Image (cartoon, rainbow, N blue to C red):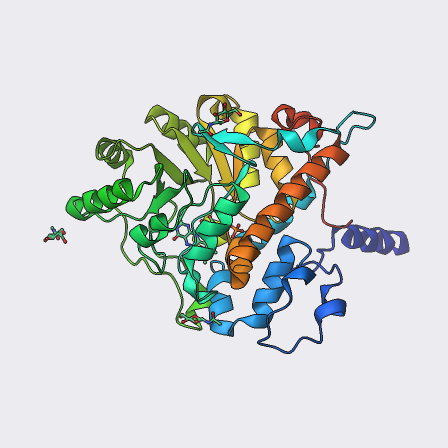
Length: 383
Ligand SMILES: Cc1cc2nc3c(=O)[nH]c(=O)nc-3n(C[C@H](O)[C@H](O)[C@H](O)COP(=O)(O)O)c2cc1C
Ligand SMILES: *[C@@H]1O[C@H](CO)[C@@H](O)[C@H](O)[C@H]1NC(C)=O
Ligand SMILES: *[C@@H]1O[C@H](CO)[C@@H](O)[C@H](O)[C@H]1NC(C)=O
Ligand SMILES: *[C@@H]1O[C@H](CO)[C@@H](O)[C@H](O)[C@H]1NC(C)=O
């Protein structure tokens, strides 16, 4: 009996869930804890992407911060997006000459040169975090040499955002569509005329997002229609524009395969940052499923992924599976409380972390990272 109790205590000890840490404790509270609420931290004091979240929570009115921070329902997907990365351990290799790894950061997205394998995901309403609104994001992306995808529900207009581009800057335009084709054609024409290099068609919000946290402040989901769109509509959409139409919000192997069948040039594995369907899988989980069940998907089209990427190592795990570039949403919106400088710093931080983490993993050339660098059997939480 005693032995049994001890055994079950041990088992429950091993299985005990760790408390969720939105911003893991790396000492920011010790250094900045005395900063009065409503005050903006010094940009110099920001060390990693989670620090931008801390600074925004400290600085912004609760309503504004909540709009960005919110996840769907009990926020299980929101938390899982962040935590799931840490259930997979690296398999580092040593004594590899990685001295040139930084020079291997640049890649291409649909043929466009980018300085690193990540981009800024489309997030609505940058005015909740900054008076310069989307300008900080478009300019920060230019400075960092990465692609920005403005949201259709941005504060500034499509024209205003694209007009702020640097020369030659590549910007993809996200669109939310309705069943009114006249309006859709207008929005596409505006995007083309403004100089968008691709359309990003978001498909993971077919119905309203169930947003408890945000609803408390009246900043819940904006789209209230039940969508009637099908793959046939996607085909029609492709005929309405000469631009490539990327599908954002793929959450299953079956749909990744359908995207190929219907001629998508690229897809974004995404659960909308855990803001739509709670318990939808994280992009990492979907990428692992694709790797196991249909690895050819990564070769046939460009696969991007977003949700929960906060560290260089997170990006590396997705890249290892064959994801071409990863998107960063909330951290960029939080970095934008510092405007262009903040966004540019966020880009710099992630580039540096990807390079040094790749180095410590023994990856000399990021293009050659592959699934063998990660143990794809998940560990449990007690560690
Ligand atoms: C405040 C906010 C607004 C968003 N608005 C949009 C949007 O307008 N269109 C869209 O396709 N995705 C939208 N998303 C989803 C993001 O593009 C992206 O999938 C998600 O933020 C990635 O997760 P991360 O925030 O953990 O990086 C939004 C996300 C946030 C946090
Ligand atoms: C993209 O990069 C390649 C290789 O570095 C280079 O040859 C090409 O000119 C670049 N294209 C643009 C548009 O900058
Ligand atoms: C908070 O959001 C509102 C838009 O709802 C905006 O007008 C205001 O400037 C934001 N506050 C800050 C500090 O950015
Ligand atoms: C579609 O939008 C156009 C332009 O706003 C409008 O004139 C038209 O009445 C709309 N059609 C329907 C069926 O609602």
